[in-house]
Image (cartoon, rainbow, N blue to C red; front, side, top):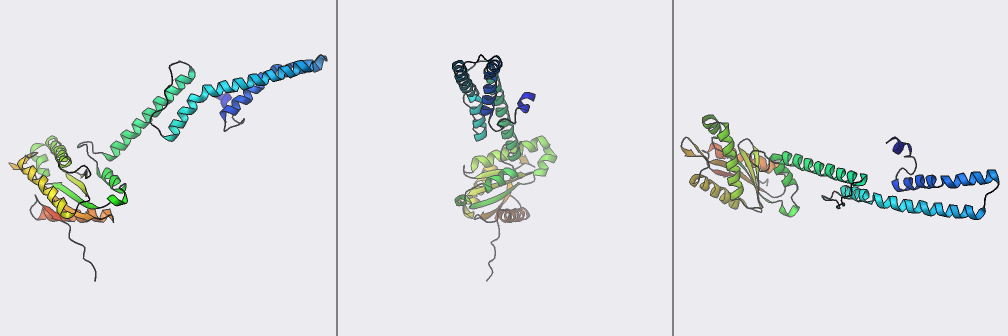
Length: 284
């Protein structure tokens, strides 16, 4: 390391040229010694000097080509990592220091990618239900192309969920949350986005849907909850309330707020129902 740092002033941006310089100096030491001896003794021969000079230059070139070829795997790996590609070219098992370094960098890069994927998943996925969390939902919505930024957003709340925890324990509450997330994911389309909004609340983005279609989809899920309940509270199937709001690519926060207001209306109206956000009054 000290030698590497000490020679860093020689072509600091090119390791190949630095190696060439060191090889050139090292291979020309015999020539310089011969030159010094010849001048000191007066016995220097021009033909011998020219021949020895040419031989050392050729030897330096061969050394540089060999060193460059030996360093090619490291350069290939560095380029792969710089481009962000997942797989680097395979290197045959030879067991030398280049192979050891190459394999070590590959392992480190793979571990780093896995760690980054794990952190990204932890930041955007709800660990209990396996679906997206609030951040994952918002990230998905922000990443939608312009032609897909329309549909309906729904905020859904499991009715009387606190009673599940109080009467049957938090373990049963967790099971109900996971089962409800599975039920929602199974009964919406693939293009729709389901997420756990927080606590016992969930959010769905019904892509390219009008309010009638979103209401029908939620009504179908509610009917399935009654015919095939995921659990019961006080001998009644667990149900949900929901509020939906049309979204046409404008302020998403405003659409979510209005959907939440519609959810509150559904709760106040007796639960187990779907309410639509009130239309925005247009000023004359």
